[in-house]
Image (cartoon, rainbow, N blue to C red):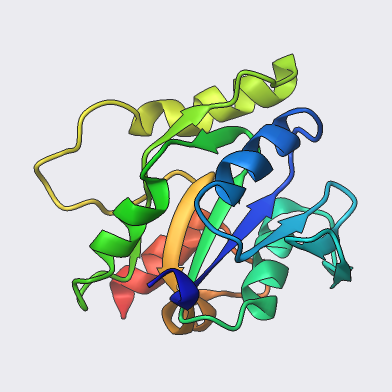
Length: 172
């Protein structure tokens, strides 16, 4: 299934966190894009592909989704590092045709400057720990995987803002 997904790494913290995230992703797939802090988009080999229209995270996410040509798109930020088995967990979740979005096991990056670490803890912290028994209605913005057609239908003019996208997906 790996050929059916594209990972989009959105840089918030920059080096060295971006490098650690990129290498952890590269260990699991060669199909990924990197969106730099300045909005430049590179493929897995570092070849420039273009730039996001705006530098904010929702616009960067949307640009990556637009460039991906695979049925599944995985969005990850450099504030976290995917654990071993991260993409296998995503692929396993999408074996169920009813699944529209999911995430995989990740940890906070150990290479974050204080402001990025605070942001990551505030966003990701509430999603850590054990898997809930109830249906999951939201995911942390730093670790999102979607069926590309569904996410494109849920994107608005503001880009890919996680909570707004989840509300739109639930409404459909």
